[in-house]
Image (cartoon, rainbow, N blue to C red; front, top):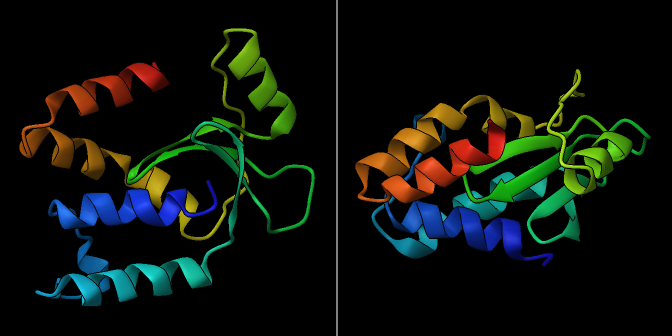
Length: 135
């Protein structure tokens, strides 16, 4: 599961998802992978909890958010670990104010781009499922 974030991001990138902030999309798969790996090296590592739920290892504190991460379809699943457990195991879905985690919170903030990508690439069910998770 430690490789999940890289593998899922690469999966989306290889299907055409690319943020303009990264510059022009390289034509070679190896070059795209290098860019994603570089972005992940500067981002806090995600620690797997259950399935595709992760908590960042940094900053080292009690109020790190929990992410539901499936490539660029990434959302908050709790503002902290206690809220995550209530959401996951008590059937709630409340997200309080969240701490900004570099890279990962930026993906969350741009989730509409990911949903538009999934819908435009013939993957409308992925977009529907992703929206269902947050509603």
